[in-house]
Length: 237
Image (cartoon, rainbow, N blue to C red; front, side, top):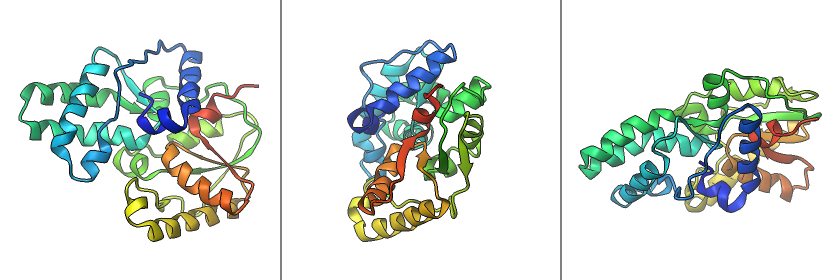
């Protein structure tokens, strides 16, 4: 599940996920019927409009052993919001399908560590890196230190702690549009903390957050790159 955001703006992240999974011996399918997970609609109160989106998700991904996405935000929607949408629809069949499929949907680092039992994917990335734990992965999914465990096993990578790491970056989807001043202020705090680490690269599991913080860092000409976790793990010597 590449997610809308990655499909439209960060396709290299999807390719990186594919490279890592295939390196680990996973047979990967990409159902072309996949579309939005429905999170933007649910978050803004359009639950009825999200029903056909959830139906499409179920049809697109049924039959797979696992659904893997490089986004804690979208996986959080599938695991926590789809059931709400399905119940509201009054369709018992849809509710049953969601209940069966949602637990098999994993954020990328969850799948590697919990399902495949791997924390060393054979990557090499000789750079000083700091990691931002995105809100949905941290709070909705409880991903915990799985991304850091993966990063610590990357050859040559120096992982440095990010001050106030658990604070939101300020993106929040439509929050950044509706509350732009607050969003930018929160993002500026996050960018300042990134600079305090002296890191060359900021890594996270959601490109939406990286777009926000990365934009602020770019405007400051800070010289700090932003990369999705999958793109780091995809690099080999």
